[in-house]
Image 1 (tube, rainbow, N blue to C red):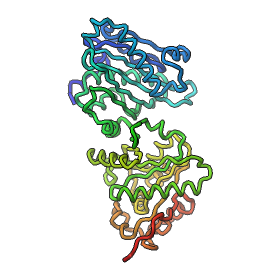
Image 2: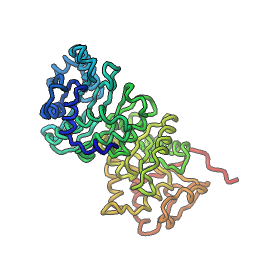
Image 3: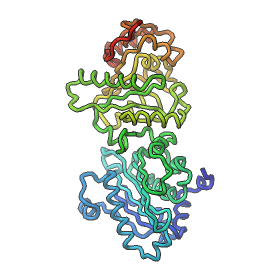
Image 4: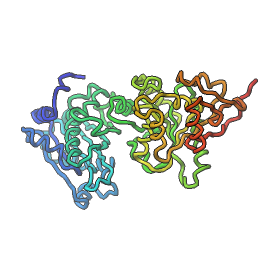
Amino acid sequence: MNSRTNSLDTHQKTLAINLDQSIFGSFAEIGAGQEVARWFLRAGAASGTVAKTVSAYSKPVSDSLYGASSRYVSMQRLEAMIDQEWNLLLTQVPQSLASQTRLFCFADTVSARNFSGTNECHGWMGIRFQDIPLREPNDLLLHLNLRDASNLLQQEVLGVVGVNLIYAVFHLRQFMESSLKTLLDEVSAQRVEIDFIELRGPAFAGWNRQNTLLALVREGLAEAVFIAAGKSQAPPTEILRKKTIVLTPFAWKRSDSAQQETLSAAILQLKAESANVVSEPLSLFALSATSFDTPSAPVDSAALSRRVEALCASCRDVLVFGYNEFYRMTAFVNRYTQAPVRFAIEAADLIDFLSRTHNNLEGRLLEGLSKLFAQNVRVYVYPTATSAMQNSLVSASAAGWQWEEKNGLITADALRPAAPLGHLYSYLIASRFVVPMPSISPPPTTG
C-alpha cells in the first residue's frame, strides 16, 4: 500500500479531489443527510468538482425521479439513482468539459437509526466513474451495516466512508483488493461493516469478483460474506433474512462428498422434527478465513479461494467468516433470522469443539455453549466412521474421550467424555441441544 495515501485524513482526501481539475461529478443521497456531499462542499474549491447535489427524501418525489419502488434501501434503488443521475450528468456537462474530465456520479440510499431504534441500520453506496475522459464508465457498489448507536454518529461514518470510496476509485485501484481496507480509513469495523461489493467496467478488468468478496473478510471489513454458486450475489442480510438455516462448518480434512452427506442428513432431520418448517431450509457451507487449529492465523488465501470455487462449482452456496467459533457464527446468523438454525457436523467435529478451552471467553466452555444455543439453535451430529475417528480429531485434549461403535460407525449418543465434561454432555444430549443423526449411507464394510 502506498504509505502516502495512508497519511491522508478525510479532509485532505476531499481537498485533493476538489483540487484535481480532471474530476467532476454529482451527488445523490437519500437517508442520513447529505454527509458525503457536505465534505466536498466545506473542504474548499468545490465548484471545480461538484456539478450538483440532490436529496429526494420524499417518497413521491423520489419515485418521480427514479421510478416507483417497494424497497427504498436496496441495490436496485441505488442502481436506479445512479442510472438517472449519470444520464442527466452526460446531458448537462458541456462537451468541452467532458472531454477533459473524468466524470463521476456518487449515490447512496440509507436507513439510519430511527427515533425509536427499531429499524435495521444499513445502506447501499456506489459510484459510477470514468478512469479516462469519455471512456466507458465503471461501477463500484457497496452494502454497509451501520453499527453506531445514534443517528448522528451513523451520518458521520457514512460521510467518511463515502469520501474514502471516491478517493479510492480515482487513486488506489492499482493496489487491487488490498485497497479495500482504505474504505475504513478513520473509522473502524466496530462502527460500520462492508459485507458486499459489486464491480463493473474496464477499470476492474484485472479484479476477481470472488477474491474481492473474500478480501472484505480477510481485511476485517466484514464478519462474513455470502458467495453464491450462481452468478447472482447479495449481502448476507438478503440471503439469511427470516430463513430456516442449516449450516455446515467446513472441515478441511474431510471430502466434499462426505460433508455434503452430513448436510443432506441434517436437512432430513430438520424436516422430520419441525412441522412448522414450511419451506426448504437454506443450506450453506461455512468456511473460515482463520485456521481452526490456530484461530489467530489466517488460512492461506489461495487455498481458501480454491475451496470456495470448488464448492460453488458443485452448486453449494458458502458463508465465509472471519472467525471459526461456532457461537460467533450463531450470533451472526441470528442478526437476520429468528427461525430455527441448525449446525450439521460429524461426531469427530463435536469432540473437537467440546475439547477446546475457549480461553477467549471469561466463562470458557460454558459461556461458549450458552452463546451457541442462545436462540433456537441445535447441533446435528452425523456419525463418524470408526476407521476415520482418530485421524479426524484435531485437539490433543480429546484423548480423554471414549466411544462405542456400531456397524463401523460412531454416533453422538455413543460418545463418552470423561468427567466432569461427561455430566454436561449427558445434559446436552438429553435436552436435544445436541441431536444424534442416523447415517443415510449403507454401513461401511469390514472386509
